[in-house]
Length: 218
Image (cartoon, rainbow, N blue to C red):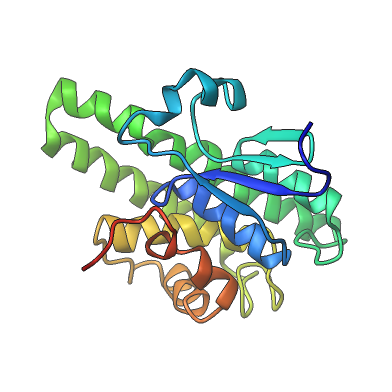
């Protein structure tokens, strides 16, 4: 039986799903043990890890004897289990907006550029088509998010408090800017939010390059 109250996060430094989960954990002020799962080496297909997440993805979170896989499910679980620093507002309309933004990121954008999909496209069509697919997909998703945020964003995505939408947006914008070297100036709200997120310690600590399994820059 796992230790009561001990949090263990199965993560990969560059995974955007794990990235947003780390932000949520940090915003909640929760300490956790980091267990790296190297996706490039295929460690997600290890039989022992498959017991943790049969889908062979990261992240997965172990909380005592409760095991949750999938970043959205983890975020909602943490919101219920650790409500002291809420990420979902009481206002029903605002709550729905946050859930919608998070859902767009984790169901309509990120799954279409995950490692399995990109590897398949590269094998069938080549690396150039893979990158074209990736950038077109990101532009489509970012354009939708920019429209959704119009008129509702404050200091943060949905107002003047950090809410659930913010970690999901931060991880997805990071992929566009840092991984794909995209110019997102045509999405001014998202561009401004990214600059805001860069200054917040909970977001800084969750950055891919700051994880223990990130390649050394030296």
